[in-house]
Length: 352
Image (spheres, rainbow, N blue to C red):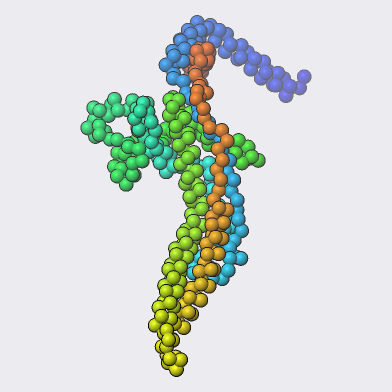
């Protein structure tokens, strides 16, 4: 046998001997390991009794966003008035950007200030969260927090530093473990919102309110440009129509003033001729503006996305409970593993 093979055989033999040595060492400590496993199992079982169940509200929706063409065929007159009727262009609310919008602090905080009816009383979702977690039990002992209220639809301009701090804590808690937004499949444009909390009604109300809040913000933002153009055009149409009516009245007044006028006195007919020009000009402008206004309405409809809710959360919500068997097994396993690790480290330090 070569020297290399002999060294390999000795190394393997030593390794097996060491393994047996460690094995018998742990066997001798079986009482300690078993006791730790029993204690861990008891602790895990106790945790399963104290751990409250969680409820998950799930809402799925799809976004249909019709991207219309530009306004190149709407005429040069619109450009002269400074109107931009064109659509086109990319959108920041696509793919993962839309899902991140649901998790943004602004959207979550606006949702927390949404009103809900609890036992015949209208309160905000933020107040409901505070009551569920019994924060006011400790706040009542502190004058700094005693009078803090989160009224429904409360304007954020009136918030104090304490209000912002409390909302920040609620947002952190919800975004960290309670709120999940994702597309079920990249090939399918269906987004799912999951809200998981220890209160069934809060999960339901918050999920629906968040979807409504983000949907409104999304639609308003996507169609803001087209809606602004339409309002400007409608204002211009009203203004030109008033000018046209005044011009028509002016023509009538000028004609009345020249009734039975001597044909030789043509200068007296000048006001009537001027008013006729105003009528013709305003008629042309009004006709074009009315056409542009109708086209702007079409553009607005094309630029306004449709958010279609597919499935809403329905009571009773799916409930997940930390099972007793799960707590017993996990507690015993983790405690036993931890004791074995401690024993190995302790013996290894002695050897060194």
